[in-house]
Image (cartoon, rainbow, N blue to C red; front, side, top):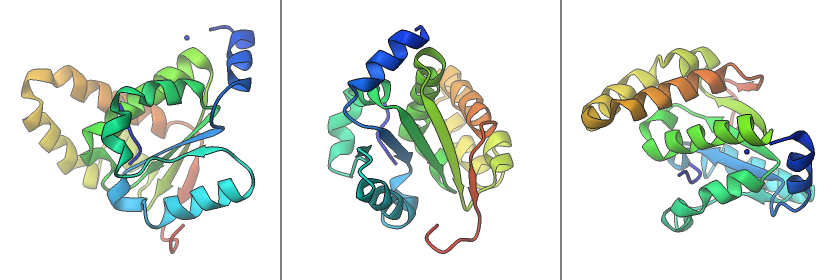
Length: 169
């Protein structure tokens, strides 16, 4: 997954012109890094689209910088996969992405890779066990778990792409 973890329309558009990247890819690395996300990243870069995709080495380094990338990028592509919700990192990043959408007018495009939007929206299927684990691990911080659940619902209600049963997307 990609790393995790405000404004009038004229100030938003002026800040977009100076952004370092055009697209920020958010994904669960274990699920999609070497398959679909690599293909998507290559296709975007080959077309001259400046695309941010972290890798395993950058994940820890960018922990404090993700917000700055998110606030600068024009478009955020979120690749939801079966194990996306197992990562508190991904969930925190999702919360930040949606905040940038609300406050900075960023475009957010969800891609449902071998999961259905309804599974993400209602935290069904593989998301059930992931949230059981989060509820166990975050007993003292159930507000974070609630924020993550709400963010998944919000993101799953956005128009996006459904990639079910597609070999490498």
